[in-house]
Image (cartoon, rainbow, N blue to C red; front, side):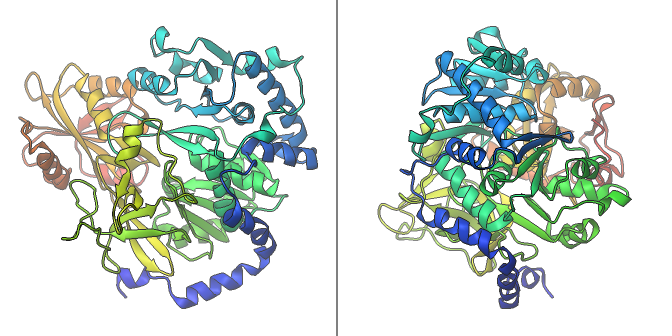
Length: 592
């Protein structure tokens, strides 16, 4: 049987999936009206939903951290005090408040306090440093920032002039709000769903990080769609999230699934492959959120009793590789894998509602899979100037229609937003969002994810912008010029970073020095695993073609060029050795 035929979704798959929905019919019926009928003008928001749940069930556990639970009622009272403090600090609807924090209950409570006021929570990536974090702070233009003491080091890496004038630590939130009102802010119930809720930073396709806009309306659509129709939690469930709260997998998918059901969110400090199931058991979780790399790392662990000594029945996430799907579900006893496809800025999502294997799922919203230009990432057009759909079973560019019911919130940068919109694709005046992703039609409105286009590649569940990595490389004293691209590693998700560089003096790379510099300048997921030293790099208008050639050659066709690989933070870059690729795919390298 061919790979393509195995990846098709058949009538038997759908029939079995529909039958399997029967036990969750009540949950789905409760969420369907919100998905179909909710409008951006409605006054339901994240804050009003949360306080409604807290009012109805104040004694239910809302957050759990390291085994300790916090109820809806006590969390709502703390959130209201924080909101009062922020209001006293001058925060009003429409303002942006930065949040630079690691995974803790305080991070969720600070976010809720901000959005209850109609302000925007700018969720900063605590892995960013120096010029990159300074850029992100500049995008926010916030006068107030809430900082976790454990993330203060990141803020200290930027010039003082770039730091917002009012910095509140978690301790400040508690101490300074102790005597303030615990009542729900009056503004919360008046806010329309179209109000901006978060800025989520994404590397987009090129350049420095961009802030994508998440409105309350789109977050609530995720609640009804991914949460209510896909995950389908019950009020006595606990969703475990160890992915960073500055990303939508935790902040939107996990939290909305929890709030929609009035369930509990168990927050993991960070992902640990060796302690994952121990933390799941400690926090009494019945569900968890994943990215594909997380699943691969778990499978790489030696088998042990805790593999099935848990109560998890459902996992939700994206990036589950087809070849490990069955093995993962069987080893860890997972009844349902709710794979989905979405992006921080995207106006649609695919969800594996019907529990079909090896698919990102189903989407009821209008989309097309079209032929594309591999160089520009834009749709190919026919003689009439219209986009052309890809042949059945062939990879194509996924685009989604933009209309009043399905808006595109875009980025804070209008020019970046405009670049993602395709106009007059199939009819005069129509507009479509360019996802920049390749997918394959599987039938019954299901698709399989194939790859990403453009200069961004995905590694360890993060988008890596090549220009950001190139900037860090070029800032090292021994590097003359660099180009960066993604290369495939067998049995891994996404693409690992590889750089081709010229050296200013000679052809001997100081791998230890380069690694030290890059570890200070970049998040760990953005570090290139391979560095190829070349004599020169093309500098003409065909430079991009040279980059494509280097990417196609990868790490296996470097000729006589020296090739270095990242062994880890202490060993730095060392000469390529046989077995390195296997070490990466087996999660044994690099050793951070």
